[in-house]
Image (cartoon, helix red, strand yellow):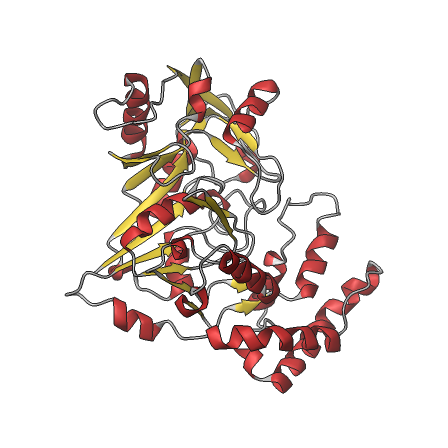
Length: 423
């Protein structure tokens, strides 16, 4: 039995979808731990392109089962649309392989309405407008609605009435017209017909798959990235859940002693979507060039991503937060189009001193300036092997390993499964 954590080490968009799909080739169970439809994981297989928002990326393998764990917040309307879309692409047995925790929480239409209002105000975070943050707020205030309520229509309506009383003054203040309690109740009862049969507890699955003397493989799939963690990320420009290893364990209910391996996924450069500090961001045409070559547009939002050089200070911080020992570097081909490649090895702080540590004070981080080391670029062969890695790329890999203390175990170029090398 092997349990592997796979998660992003930057501000999301590291290529987790492809790599979780790759790592799931022999997985029996893939579990999504937290977040919701704010994820956008893209998988290319046999010229088919799958974009997943709620569903774990390993599900594209026909043998794998998928579980949406209790740490998630789920938009049932969006989830059904996603399932039907994937079914239309040929995975007709999908529903036989999906289970959803009844303790995961509902994202209501009102949650999306709240987020849209907030994102129009000064100081907006730059969210995906999927209602994720407000849904987690409802959960934390103990006013949220678990998916289990879809089985109990009368109790569901009672809970909807209660939570709407919390929201109504806000909608009235901003003169926003929203669906009534009766309308939302009716909408939920419609989707309940298809969602309720998918509800099931995780523990029976774990009893089946986590046995010390078998060969089963389980993957815990992260969403977003470590630098967006609600507790340890670049607050307030973060997501609303914990995206590090501890968050994945909490979101699934699997104890830490069950974990065998933690794999961290990173780009050869850095991107982020939305607002927030970004010390290595490249302004102007060079940043636009990187974004164009790398296809840096959000799978969920369609927004262009901000692009910058690899930040080893932030990466080492993420490695320490997550405890990963194995690294995956994705999009190594993108930097082939640059004559020189820069890597941030330290920050110049506002007081003029230098530091190789990621500051927890967000106001200091906003004023940090990168200290760079420059590398020659490299060539990527279509048949890249461990024997023909360009020396410049090997030097880049060696520096990452020395700086972070983690081993680079995989290289990835292009979205297809076969454009991946175990090193």
